Length: 128
Image (tube, rainbow, N blue to C red; front, side):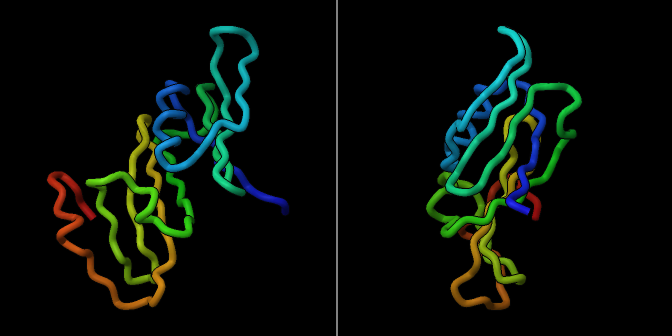
């Protein structure tokens, strides 16, 4: 296998492109069969790819994707909870504009029995 690419259903390609660009993704290509028709977009971040589709039968509601990165803290926007997890990862949970859950994580340098850093994770309305 050379790779695998998740397809996420979206309703507004530009809003989603803008949101994923905050995580370091850039548009590799996009396609519509005719002007005004649904867009299909390929995003790229290093060797990783995500496909975003406005086509109603592509993807599913509230898909979950896990992105492995070198340093989760370097790409997560300020104010977002980042936690050391007991399975040896440092992670953040994000939700894109269409309700898809995007977990972003990097391996802890020294795995330990982790507890959330409450300074970072006391965000109203957030459940772990």
